[in-house]
Image (cartoon, rainbow over all chains, first blue to last red; front, side, top):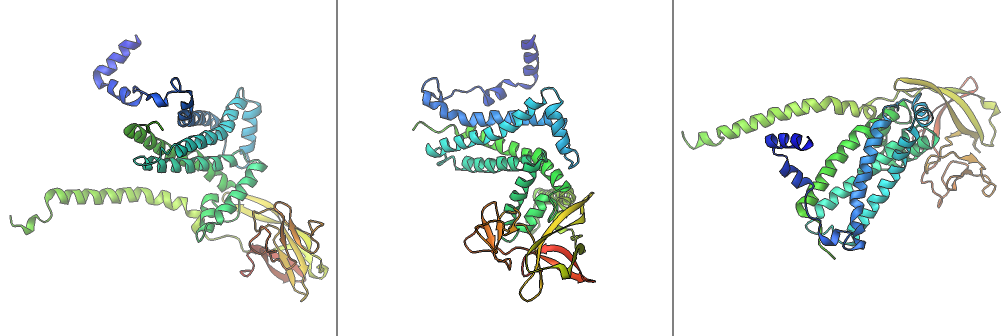
Length: 224
Length: 170
């Protein structure tokens, strides 16, 4: 039955070559942990992506309960954490995943750095990777405020003070982030929410696509 | 047709025209969202009113005292009362000084003689930031600027305070 559905679609739009391009390709021996156990270091990029997928999925479900409003944000998080079945698990996934993704990302970066895999012709992919790193940090920074508890509030206060230290445009940059020159409040929360769930994920998807297209086009770097 | 008339070909003309029109459409689409996003930066500050902090000028001593008061704060669509505080005292010239308690390092709260180790100074417990009595940061400690100074006014013998501004601007 499934085969028939697949054939029916393939007959019309020829999906097999697309599938082949995306997933059906040989993994070189030096990258395969089944051949050399030490090749597990090549897994960190994939693991980063895996955790990102978890973040996206858990985040989508969290927005079913979360409200980006200073009166209700904390209450909505408290409710989903204590009253909603499995809410604690989903928020736990998002909370811990946020740290795990940074760890994996750093391990991936270290592997690429110490293997020299960023060298010609892969410089562009390194740069895309650095941008991805910044987007991840931005997601971490904006997501941290959303529970609207004391820790979140003061961490953001400090983060905004740091942004204010940028030469020349610091004050404007802070206002742009916070939505007000001096208050960390209602407008800050809505802004951070918008940045966290729409702007940065959009940038993340674009950069991830570029990252993956480049690695498929250039192939993985050779053995040391 | 002569050479001159073909300097811009029909194809080029259409390309330019379509790029121009497309550019205008894209710009038209983006202007409003971008203007909306940067509105907080361009909006004029609504602050400026000085508030009565319920402290008579004659009660101010040379010892910095913490003064707390409330103001009505408007945060976009959200209006609330917020607590403000200042360290107020009279300096050696008998002039009233009102310093913001917000540390210029990373925004913690400083207090007068907050540490027994540093008498006669403002002290921030977060990273051992220190300030002399005149608000100047002690060199070698984390803060890189003096404590902010409140806009102040005396009306009918009462102290009124406004916004805290960096020293020199107030």
